[in-house]
Image (tube, rainbow, N blue to C red; front, side, top):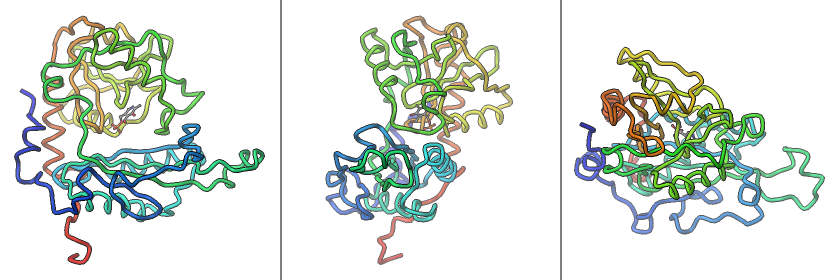
Length: 327
Ligand SMILES: Cc1ncc(COP(=O)(O)O)c(C=O)c1O
């Protein structure tokens, strides 16, 4: 049985929201160096992050008042910035940690979705300036909202029906490096509409040559004959992907990051998606055809272990919810 995560989050005292000002009930944002209520966040229309998807971002989550794998997310974010020649205007890892922490504390949320980005910044008036990354004024933005699951409890328990997109392939790594968590995602967004049209719950994209890459907001895994496989190329190095690989190894399962084809997915015993937005999401069918094992024992064990280990404090950075003047 899958651990009923939403039910625990809703009822367990360790998830009870801490004191917060009423204007922060929906969430918080970061604007010009200040923490503001979510509704007050703004992006100038000339910011190239908005105009041209010229930006990188990351998402870390909080549960039971603890960030999960914060250092891994911040390291990945720093690599994303470096790959796209962006500079975080906050200047240091500590300042970034402080910005993320301040937003969560303002909301009092014990279970939160924490998003932040650095954009190229305002479009310079001189077109020639666009040739030099150091002539841009990169901008930091962020927000915190209650924890988000890609799919709710009912879909997780039943397992989703995953659609292999025919109409879209994942942007190739030589076009935009998917290891940099970036804003270029219309391929993923359109594939979700295709999944919806075909009566599925979510989508997965290939590289155009039959190899699976990743899904919107998530990495894909298959389980076959006790081996756990996930694509090695064309995808984000998901932190939950890494976590799942570690948990699998701990369970004594053989894990491999390798080429995974559409046929391998369809012939799999089990399959699942991994994401910061919900952890492990079971897949019960592909293109409407049920997988042999359904929501099977490996997926169930990983799902439950993911939450158990998180709540025990694995890779945790606890937040201090006291008011700044009480700290
Ligand atoms: C395209 C894509 N792949 C994979 C993932 C999963 O990454 P993580 O486990 O770090 O959340 C995400 C997360 O948003 C994503 O956007």
